[in-house]
Image (cartoon, rainbow, N blue to C red; front, side, top):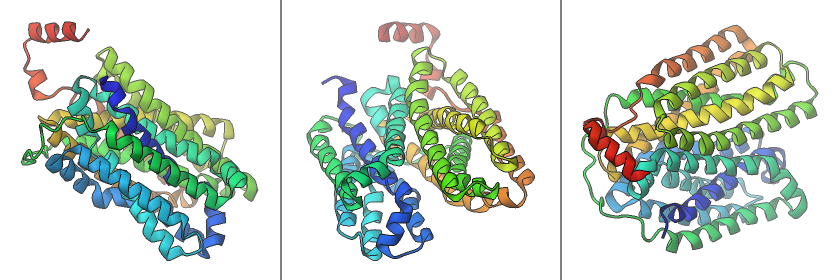
Amino acid sequence: MNKWTKLLPYWFLLFTIGFGWFILAPLVPVLSTSLGVGTASILLLVSMYGYTMVVLGLLAGWISAKFTVKTAIYVAAALSIIGLIGRSLFLTNYAGFLVFQIIAAAAYPLALAPVGSVADSIYKEHAHSIVGISVGILFFGLAIGAFFASSIAAAISTVGLLWFTAILAIIAAIWVVPGIKNYPTNYKGKSLKGVFKVGMIKNWWVGFSIASMSVMFGGIASTMLLHFHFALGEALTYGGLLGGLAFLGSALGAIILPPIFERYNQIRAGLISTSLLSLISVSLLAYSLGFGPNLGLLVAAFFLFGFFGNAFWSMALTSTTNYVSDPAQSGFATSMYSVITNLGVAFVPVFLGPEFAVDATIAVIVVFVIEFIAFILSPMLKTKNDAESQQPPKAAAAKAAAKA
């Protein structure tokens, strides 16, 4: 089986996880009525995926090392089915819906956190491409959910939409079971001692900064439009559009840019250029939201920050695998990165987001400083592992020729 073909069932599973996750966001008012709870309780359901990454991300990396990444993916597929079917049965019971939403959300860290193991064990030479496409497909699922959930629910009802996500999860599992059976297992049971390296902290800052800003601006877009006297309906519509564009940009950026930079052996140039363009776009985004929204500028800034920011995030994620020596450790390295990233998602929007309505100058400066530090760190991220770095020039040239 072609190495790229092996990845298709895994990628479809990631798409279904992203889609099942974010169909909830546009339906917050509907779910609030159906479940009889306030908006904050519904937003907790949406945020649950990020919380499970913080709690279970390292466990996912450990499972992929101890029992191989196949086990983590199988468990993810099973939990996704159980959770999505369960929440479809509890549309009028918040407690039941919450329990099954937590089960469904647990599929996210188990499937994505050890992506380093998937890339390193199947096609290490194209790790940036595999990680980028994997992350991009997850975000594509998020974008499709954000854009089309309301339309699908209007056509087949809210409960019909929930069952549709469950059916997609079942299809993904049916494909995954035979589709990943030939994934390598030779690294099973390898020691994780010494996986953490101090240099990884630079990567963690990048992941922390990009993800936290992305979620924060998506979360405050409608609120800030209301702050500047947009009508309620307009603010909600434009807020949803901007969030969807950010996800779409994130999907396209992660899928398109890392493979290009990898193809031409320009990973460091890719890290620097995407970090600079992320800094510029997020600065424009912060300024416009803070001092008076310009819709044209916001549309461009949301999409471009998603496009360049997620490409930067993805390459920084892959960079962590250069600190370790085998697929078992690679999965744990990317899991650590994912956990730190979602800590940023959990805390930064809560504390910095409201500041935009209180003191926009301070908020914009803080955003700029956080992203500027990420830009400064971008040339320092590791682009080769120690074995490749120590390879003699002639051997490296021969290896490159062999790949070509």
